Amino acid sequence: MKAAIEEFAKEGYKNASTNKIVETACISKGILFHYFKSKKGLYIETIKYAIPLLYDEFLRL
Image (cartoon, rainbow, N blue to C red; front, side):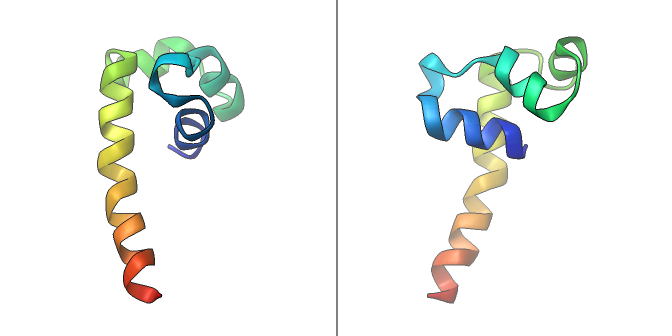
């Protein structure tokens, strides 16, 4: 998730590279797509993961 968050935050959805994500995460592309099926699926799960973290951080301010 951390690698995906970093890549999507830096490059946006359209320009994000799944190759960079798997390289940073030290996993195979096959494993990535086994769990997330597509770049869009990964993006959606990344957002679902990040929103509660952002919300908690916001409440601490």
